[in-house]
Image (cartoon, rainbow, N blue to C red; front, top):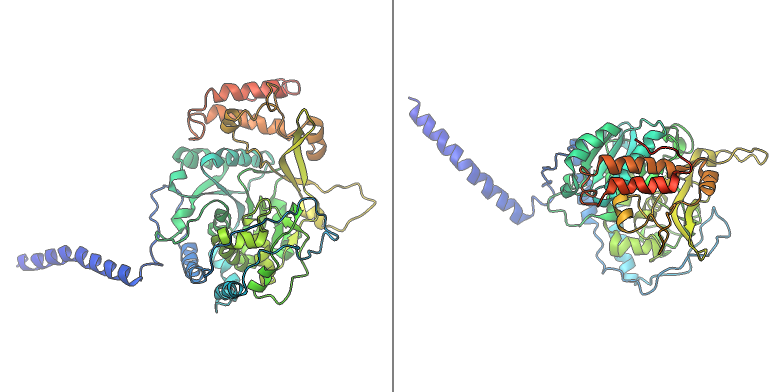
Length: 485
């Protein structure tokens, strides 16, 4: 009695894989699967949140449909903003330099741009934020040689007594390091995610470097995000940023760079604006840190994602024209301005740490950014209260001990004299309030000795623990009696 049903079931089970194969091949041929395949995560990283994955899939289609239909922009000259001081720090004027994009290409770029911001559902995107995201935390991008600076930055964050959770995004599965992501980072209240796990397997754009930042922020589960570059350290607990002005009223805080902004004024025509905006700060952005609320600025992030995905060869040269630091740095403020979303730019000029060579030539090695709450408060000329330094962006060189040792960055050039990268103790203490370089090196030594066989970038580094200790001892011994244990 059971033989016939059993044979039928066996036939069905045998035929099912063939049916699936034929169906998939048909959908591939017809392009039907183009937007439905995601990378299957074998990285062991935390999996993408399904609702965020679905949200991104929807808008990835729109961004793909808005792909610019113009040739790659090749700059014949680059903007030179160094040394130009603005007449008014709070009012940007058009930079007197233009790429010279042909009018027909300007119109094509405008049409492609409009596909995203003119989409019927785009204006209602912010309403989805509370359904998609929750909580507050810090986001960074690491992996490879950026893992060591990121771990150092998180350790320095914990020294401020901050308990904010951290989500660490890696470019792809090859950057996933099991022991780091499953033991070292969780001990610091941090967790790993892989950006590639959030993208279609047939993703037509190669996403890397500057493009990773906005995707990490978008893919993070946090509603309110403090993004920090892997080499950017908090000097104070950042928690109060989320609970005070100017973040409460704007939902977006950015920080200044050294130079005036150099975007091609034609950008605003491409973005559909009738004239050059009047509410922008004179200086360009330094995006080693960014404070953003998705409830207010999810549209800003989607538009910034568009500018970054099509950044190389299109929006990066349009927004910076080859000036120093060209990349994602201008895309966030540009998106907010185009959409008329609120924002606050810290007015306090950034500080610089570094050292002088024998010929007195100065080498800047780190940038110092200041507290937006202090900056936002009305200025009392009789008050002695100073705007507090909040972030130290150790951008050149990165504080990766394996690389510092291999490249002799622990010595003054062409000498055997030990080098304080961020400058003399007196000048560092005057700006920061304490000797942060010595504090950072206690963490660096500890990392070099505890992670020498764990962190991939440290493996094979010759006597990394002993050499790190030696540098600490010979550089800071006069101020500190004992090595960190």
